[in-house]
Length: 180
Image (cartoon, rainbow, N blue to C red; front, side, top):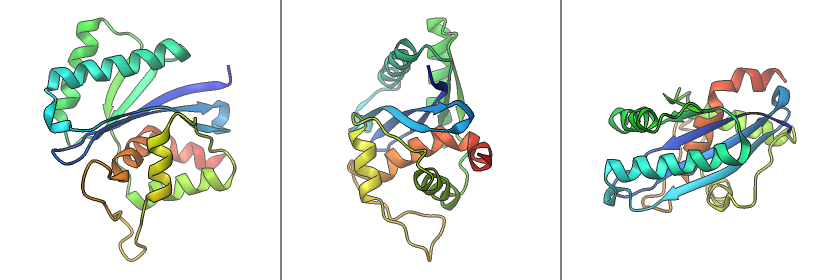
């Protein structure tokens, strides 16, 4: 009942990384930011676009069924074909509870700073089932000499994919989060 809205961030993988989805619940007036569900799909190169569309729709349907909130989905906008596939899937299913948009992709340093801020303010909570996101937060490395990049680990265990998905889920509201 304390959930104001839910945003989902999606980062698309490539042949050596994973597709990642993170659903984040936002408490009223941005009092809490809570990743509530995640999905990591290793072996992204082995999926067809239709298979990815099915996994996407299954994920968002589970979130909607559990929380009964309109969903805004922010996807890595480097993959417009996959985003268009998601939009087509929503139309095909007659879905009225979700809308798909491209990620805003604010500078990485801004996304890191807002995440640190909500953690420092005690507004960040995370469901224990989000094991990949927890692992990503524990293993992420950033170099202050290169403020707009993370030190990526190559392969399907790259924590950046999961962090990007989380950040896409909150970046639309960065200014509102800062104000509270």
